[in-house]
Image (tube, rainbow, N blue to C red; front, side, top):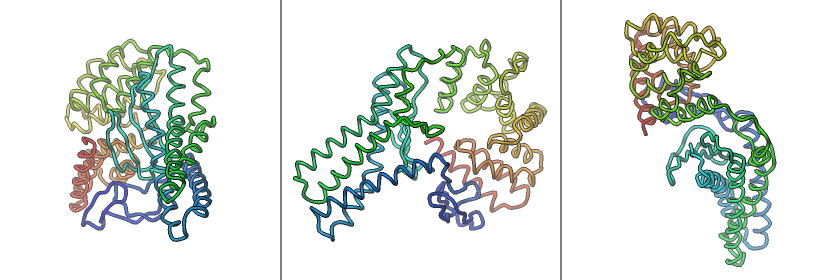
Amino acid sequence: MRCSECGFKSDFVAFFRRERGGWLDGTHTVCEACVPYSLTKEECNQAASSIYGWLLVLMVTAFYASHHLDKAAFPVFLGLSIILTNPIRTFIHEFGHAAAARIVGQKIVSVRIGRGPAWIRFWLFGISFDVLRYSWMGGQTRHGILEAPDLGWKTAVTAASGPVANIVAGGLALCGAILLGYEGAIAGILTGFAVMSVATALLNLMPEDNGKDLPSDGFHLLNAFRRRPVFEADLVTYLRVSDLTAQGKWDAAVTAAASWRTSIYRVPLLALIVHCISRRQGDAAALDYYSTFESEVWGNTDYDQSLLKVNLAWSAIKLGDARFRELAERMVKAAWDESGGKGAGFEGTYGAWLVSIGEAQQGVPLLINAARTIHDGNDKADFCRFLADGWRQQGDMPRAEAYLTLQKRYLEKAIS
């Protein structure tokens, strides 16, 4: 069988289940470590916008077909129009953002096309493009944190470049249709693409705040030149370190956080440093680094300490060294109490701790739930490792082997 979310294949049928979810709430086959992707409210709004766009294409193509195509060619023409217009115009839109951001000096993190689980990843001009399963549901360009005084105009140029790219592409498509004399299916597809591209540009220029990670380009333009409080140096440093950590640039993140001991964000920064060192140099190095500065950390109570505690606990649990057993127990219990058990990282860490002390029956359900909701491939691989240990403790060797195979798959994907 094959998991529809992560692509894991196995003959161990009991490792899979049928569950409803995903687009249109369909039924999917998923492994124990996955759940069908479910759309958020904001993503449902994005899907509705895409459907409206398709209806616009339908009207344009129907009008065109009634004048230029016979009835037999219409279904093929309509299908190609719908399939080609959305993913391609989204790619052009996001590439416009990415190219403009690169030109004005912003550091591109990634470009995401669509929503849902990852489908295809490729690199173009040094920019990472992730095409997700529901590729017709818009896109997003992420770039680094800026602190330059000309941030306003750079933000405006970057925001406007997506709609401009759509208008330019639509104009070229319309020119192609004109050169073809508006005759034939190709000219019709170009006409539909041109109309959809211009409509996409106009819709994105409307100033709408569609929720987290989904504000429109018009919203960014409207706010680009508004007066805002100047970011303090400590906050800029923290945001930059968070950005580098999210990119997996562990060494650069640690270097950028070199002044953490004098920062008012020293607890959150140390939490990121511990995470980065554990990924780059190993858990022992991360815990040794923390031990060097332990006495300087806990006096600051202005910021949430649960992330640092769970990162320390996670490194200590994975290491399995008796020297850090007391630290692991103290930190994992404190992080669990402070977080209320909410969040895949906290749930998975506590579950791993229970498995490590022989309480697999209590730990495995927590780890399964965490594995299903965590997005980081390295963390998911680690959860699978402890799940394999948990099922081995309970005598279920086939399930333990399945999780070990799944762990290898996630590690390979994380490296690639």
